[in-house]
Image 1 (cartoon, each protein chain N blue to C red):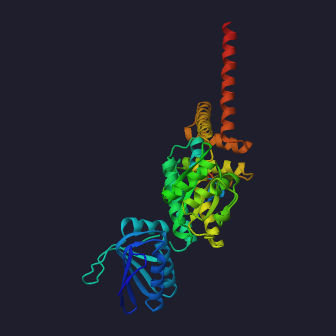
Image 2 (image 1 turned 90 degrees about the vertical axis):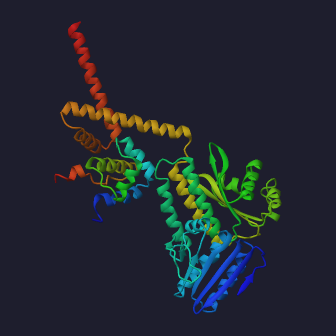
Image 3 (image 1 turned 45 degrees about the vertical axis):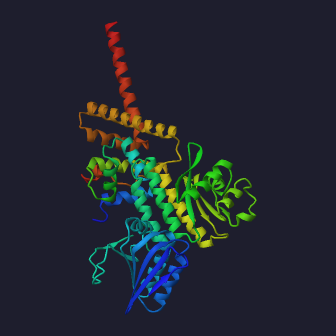
Length: 377
Length: 83
């Protein structure tokens, strides 16, 4: 059985054997063809096919809308005791699944020997069950990525993952971006495509728009129907010209201060239901965690100052250790323990106590110098 | 084994509201010699820190708890090993 979608770039072939349905996709699954694919998949499940195999071998492109269809069907099948497998995903589609985290729901097979129907590939589990689970897993992963002093590349890579996940899961999202204020200037650090980049740029140029307001005022700005929007007269015509009709910008915070926004754009008016707005907040929080860990709220000067302070304190503690080792005739670690116990006893930070030890030693040295000078004088 | 000191260190870090990177900076400031990767492994219990390293991490955490108005809840191995 072959179904050719209204979108001519998409074709679906279906084979049914008992409870199993094999749907082979060809061409492109995007916003235009995803509804048709979803409707057909729903119909196949309604017919009692509890084991669905989606063969992506003939697919040249799939975006987040296709991922949503597959995720929804997998969830439905799992609830009814069935299962959904995906065959022959390309590396990029595999990555999309990976980012989305559909592991517990979808089984990804490497390949299949189509001549006898025997699977020869290895089943690979891939992380995304529900939005909250995906988000939690992502968070742990991203926290690992930014565990080390983060450079821009690491942070931007993590934010690109948030953008991909937001686009894959927020209904109505045709594009997503993350704007970040660095060194006083807003710029886009992750965007789903060129149109979205242009949308952000339009706001930076005019100095207005939901993204600008969210990132400055630290609260969500929702333009439901751009046609009747009056808050951003210079920017709105640019958005409409690019075919965008609704925008949802949620603020990103680092250490409780607004530093940017996650912007979700749609070609549809009133595209974002309350649950999508809540979902946007989830991703905003996720990105905020990344940004807080990366300390993007600190200026270069502040970072330099913090590093210099750490180095100064480290040196001071080392000097104090040396003084105690010399004074008490003990080893390095024991000298450290002594210093640490003193600091706790006196309720002072270790570097303060170290300063006192070093100062005291210096005074003793100066006093003995004076004494020597006196004796010789 | 679940409540051994190394297993608990990461939960203290979370309570102290410190990122791994920020804790590493504090640990380094106090004289710590291990890399951020090693520190993360210590926190999660994948690697066993030396007694001295453990106590430097513990102190970095305790100083943070004091800043937050608390006490110093993380035990020092050097102080407990002779008890």
